[in-house]
Length: 434
Ligand SMILES: [Zn+2]
Image (tube, rainbow, N blue to C red; front, side, top):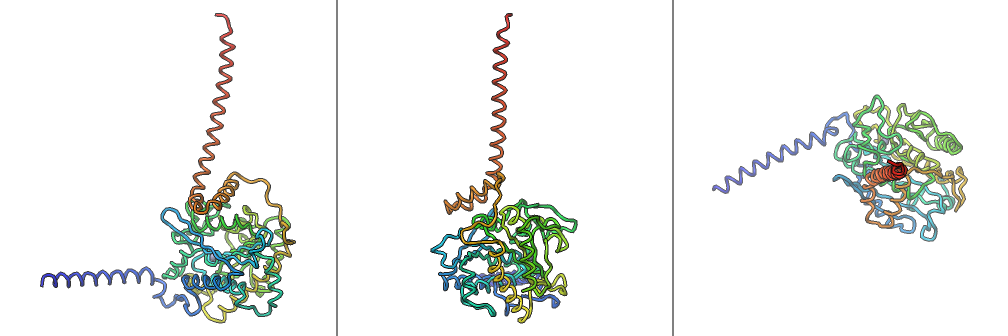
């Protein structure tokens, strides 16, 4: 009897617990989905992040002669991130990546922009040869692709994306609340008057976030000719700078403008805003990936594309604001932007005067200590494989120690010199007779 009574009280206690936890989870996760004016994720159109990873792995598995894949993991202070990178390289086993034209594309840097990762998946399917593109002759596409190595990051912010899938439909930041497009070092941490930490939190320091560290590592080792950071929320084609309302001077800047005008005419129905991110979007953005790619990695063509936005959606209705919610628009966006990337693959090397084996731009001759150390550590980390994480995370500390070392060397030298001069002086003084 006694045991039955205690069992029944235990059972009612656990039902109570279950009730409260369900209530809590519906309050936390369902705050967007329970409101009828908020559009939920359209699961009939969009893959879940897990399904997308499974599909991409299967695609690469079926097409090993064209595609390869790597998952890069790192973490700090108990926060771990993993970034999947798919590389397209036609017959890449026989040729060297460095002699080819290199393109780096990142999708899904903001959690709520699901449509961008769907474009990535379709683009990879086209690159694999499993999907064809209307209006493009497969032979001429193959000739274009032969000269290229393309790295695609289909879902840069997997942790943030998982928060969106759990019901936080407006989340754009990573799994610990940092905006991955404000965490880079160019003009990092500057805040505009309308700064909102729920949107643009830049993190505790430049490159504080594992996802940004991984992307920096990829960009520096791959050294792309073209970088595109793919977002949604509006229709726009941006070039540097995001942190100023001007575009850079020089001929590559003009080439970027020509490329963006072509893309707007051919694939954006002339609807896209064009120009520097800072001048066109209506606000300046500090610490962005594209400004870093242009200024520090010296990528000759660095872009941010905004591929879709619903200006009619209310500011709380984030899924609808950032993603198409009906099949025809979903298909139209994917087809238009896959075609835009194929245009970039075709015209990019031409615009930059690339011939196999040639270098495109004179890379900066003078590099800062920070950049030197970054490069040095990157080389070492690739040589020692497993030590990557430790070295990436220890970079800040090593820099600090290096500066301290320099400072103490200067101090020691100063003390040494002053000691010599004192000794000499004493010798002179001791020569005086008294
Ligand atoms: Zn975005």
